[in-house]
Image 1 (cartoon, rainbow, N blue to C red):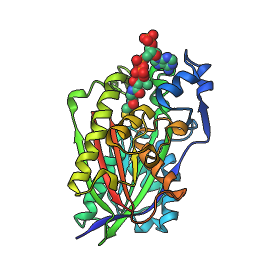
Image 2: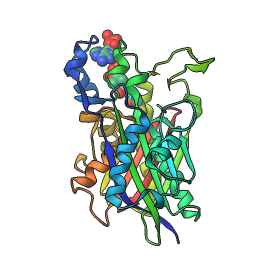
Image 3: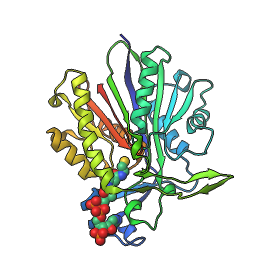
Length: 319
Ligand SMILES: CC(C)(COP(=O)(O)OP(=O)(O)OC[C@H]1O[C@@H](n2cnc3c(N)ncnc32)[C@H](O)[C@@H]1OP(=O)(O)O)[C@@H](O)C(=O)NCCC(=O)NCCS
């Protein structure tokens, strides 16, 4: 049996920090409202000359260093992003060039905040099928460019950043299972509906969402996907050592953990310092928990995400 094994992770946050207090000077909001409703204290904002591929490049270099893998050993690149450098080519191709990798499949996936889960599941299936030895999987986002900075209901929620993971073929797990879902009947609930026509954005160029609907849906599926994942692996919820959920709102994370009976001590959270970095939030949180020594060999780590579409999914890893 062939598995994918994680051999390195890396992450990158842009230098500029935007605090809730900074936002108080921009829109009619308050630090206490943002903290109490979302758990967010600050977020990072990319510099004008930084693109999603630049954030990704920094995260990938750290992952490659951690894994001791050189560019010519990578034979698949999948980038999850909602904020690509260009309409085309893919950010994965631009990243491939910046990394100096000569020839391997490289493509983007678009599943919004579930993007990293979709990308990792896809790379896992390439490896299990024997079509690739070592894959680079990245979530990278610059949401600051698609926010209406006069709309307090959305601009306080998001941040920029990137996270990367290297996985390779192994006869030992590794990734135990992946689970992907989508329900397109909600496509209008969380969206950026503008589209590019003759070089101009036609329609609304900013994130719009029905916050309450997203909140309720997220709590529901974040619980369901954990049950689905542990059942398929003949495990109990108590066997999960670390839950690493998409970081959208601390109240979504706490409600999910409570419904599952998972103590918050076993949940990795970064929402306070990063905000919602969409496809980057899960690999950013994972990299943090690995580097600070929380995740140890033999432990079960469950990654789960939910996002626009709606899309949702999970990947269970035995570390
Ligand atoms: C967006 C979200 C934080 C709003 O929290 P909420 O508790 O549902 O708040 P409501 O939308 O009911 O708004 C309550 C009040 O706060 C106000 N408000 C909204 N944003 C505000 C802000 N940044 N600062 C101050 N007040 C704000 C609203 O106008 C409303 O005022 P009103 O009662 O006078 O009408 C919450 O719904 C959420 O997190 N949803 C999920 C969003 C998400 O995760 N999206 C990405 C998914 S991947």
